[in-house]
Image 1 (tube, helix red, strand yellow):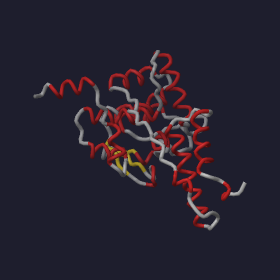
Image 2 (cartoon, helix red, strand yellow):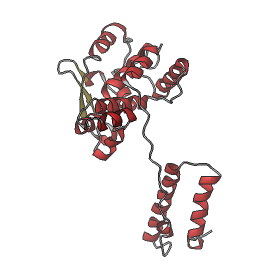
Image 3 (cartoon, helix red, strand yellow):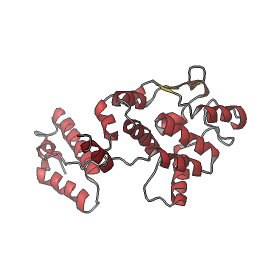
Image 4 (tube, one colour):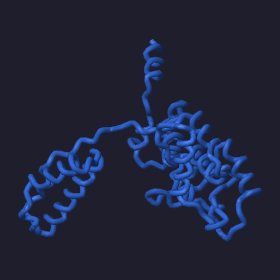
Length: 242
């Protein structure tokens, strides 16, 4: 089939198929639609077709959902229940820094500065660097790990195993999943949820959202605003201020 043979109805049928037959969520279907628009734009620029028919279709509305996060108490309970010491320390680091799991596992020994109490993120998402102050609760366990039980392996990764000299995000998430199941929790928890929890709890405690944005490494404040969860208890407290 040639691209000029395709019609708007064909694209609509395809998107309908993704919804009804594949049961894809609105966000996934929206990504497919974006790809189609980009493809037709390329085709038009190359004179492969006369019109970008993908632009004639209404954008798919994405239902916004508040992100899952753990309260400080839940995060502590989860971390304490993890029976793999290195994963436990990694999860504690994620919760107290808000790092992405990839950033955390790529930390080198030189990236943690106990003199300045700072963690240096080098080449984070978007190839950007940022600094995160060390939480006072994180300093003792990190120092203990480095002094007493980090394996003697030929690697400069901060978090290392004796077998491979590093640890994968897949393994960390599997340990978290097993721990959540053992606790009997219904909610889905991943390493990234600990990042959400870091941000959500800071905002809940009144930390300026711009400060949270800088800690997370977001270039856009709108991205950070997804962590401003509104709960009924907060609303009740708000109306009773009058």
